[in-house]
Image 1 (cartoon, rainbow, N blue to C red):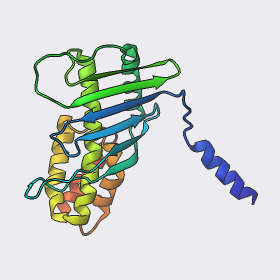
Image 2 (image 1 turned 30 degrees about the horizontal axis):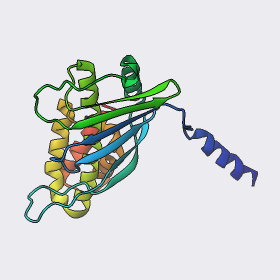
Image 3 (image 1 turned 120 degrees about the vertical axis):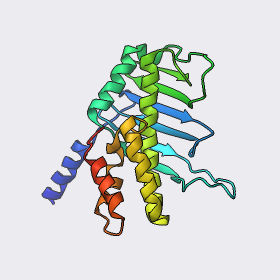
Length: 217
């Protein structure tokens, strides 16, 4: 009985403990022109977090590829990336500032970024920010959310349209190279599954292997 108790205690101690006062970063993103049109990403200082997006039903005749469905899962970003996020928040007074430029620029999606922690709380909301660091901050977070969504889409394709994986992986590889997708580590399990599946075409398995080799980029 004692070995079991010790094992359970060890598991409990290995889990991150987050109380109400621990630092938390939350991103709420919305863009009606995308599928899904809204999502939320919560990030903790160690890189762990949670992502949620509800599926939407497209009209009959819509030619858009298979959507990701409802996505509700724990995710893990690299520790260095999480550190960068929280350092940016503190550099900008816990986001207690007006981030929106109010410039006439193309709609990129509304980003509301909120911080709560023992040192205070703050939030800002913007489509486009004149502050280069804040704009890049928003772009990075959107890129992470997009990566998680594309990972969920891969899972749907594997189940319902395996031939569609080739085009999807082509896009993911291109977007990961130019920065539209970041933190590929958040979909590591999905890529590993594709790499190891003998029923998936070789080209898809090769791309999965190359993406996995990118590490936490």
